[in-house]
Image 1 (cartoon, rainbow, N blue to C red):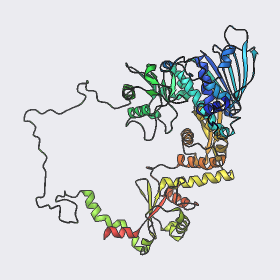
Image 2: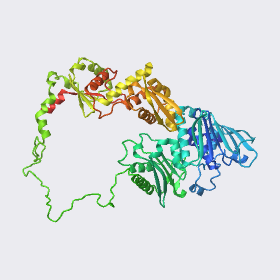
Image 3: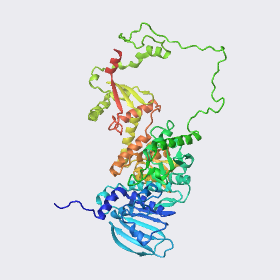
Image 4: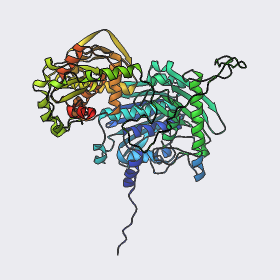
Length: 624
């Protein structure tokens, strides 16, 4: 029987390794820039075309490579960082596996030009699909220039599953942010299709954060500085008021390397316990310095997951450090026992005050096994004024209901949210004569629900969901018919955005114009809102655009056809009236009429029930 086990060809092995190390164009950027940092580069320039599909070029002024080193760098497991297994536990450099360049060369067309400092000539190498096409001397600049073209050209399945250009560019920008934050002394520039995204000089950590995330970030940063025998923590955290509903400004670095650590993230969240708005995440930029022998950075191919030897102790140190930093800036309420007279406690003066013990009243005849219609358990306090008024006036709640005949309402069972199967039938019910305006008296309950009697019972309308439905259908009509009217702003709102948020607005720009938004991109990271849809002219333009971007980051869509529906959904949710807003009778009437003029008045755009009817049958059971 013939042997069936054989060694894979190098080209196939490199493609398999690329599946672990090179997941998308952003992975190529990460590996190449980290190699530049290890080479001692102080200036790195990155050129991207078509979000990395066509070209990824990384140019640095590092020490360069000799002809032999340049050729050997593309071999699997060829590295200058490791000599023996023990070296894995003393790593302070970025790339050390020796798989990155071999993996990139296995799935792309790669050209490299490199020259060492002091040498007259450099080296040019061209590799395509792990096959050397050319190697020759070259007159090039000192340092290294990598050009990666047509990524995944020989793995069409991988190329097909790349996301849209906007999504892939967002991943690249995120990788550049991580590298720039970990190395603030590195001057780094990023260009996409010859347009500048970042042009960052060498600077300190705080200025680097501000350069990446906007000038508004500067006044909201809280410094953190803690040194222990186990771990040293430096960096900055954001004030609670700047917390966002999306992740994106959370960064951990250990020994100059970015890492993801959900366990430490929970430590940060707990440090902000009870001072954060619900469902929000604080910004943090935390740098850890630890003994390399106490961590393992070799547990994941992308080297973003790191194992700590004593995670629990580090967790407590992180939480305590952040709580101390928050407390120093008076962002967390505290009690200072060192201040005399801070708390006024009354003092007894020997018999001058008489304290009465609380009196407990019980009913000695109470029998818990006796059935009783009351729930006072043998003791009942005197009724309050409010209770007396309720007892006298409860009948007023049902005044006017006796005019309607609710004898058959029990069969409808409309107390539960309506099903999609019954939607058309129920819509017909809502459009008959019982919805005539003259027959309705409206009551707003807790500034959240609108209540009105109808023929079959009591109709309850969720005011926010109703407004969402109205706005959603208005926005869809505006998009389909291009009828949106823009309200020009007398003083255009100026919004500072980071590169990721700016790219989101660029992607959405054309669709936002069809809705009535007028955005002007004058500066690198600044957007001016010159106009907003007339339907939303009463809202703050800056808040509306920022909320739209945050919502889009929560659930970005790549399909152009779905984008318009989702954009209308985001806008209606961002601009609908909130709970707690008191409405005038005219506003309630207008909301009611517009809701039942909609095609689907029963459900909000997100699928939640808007209208419920409590049948008279349920009221009758309450008074029996």
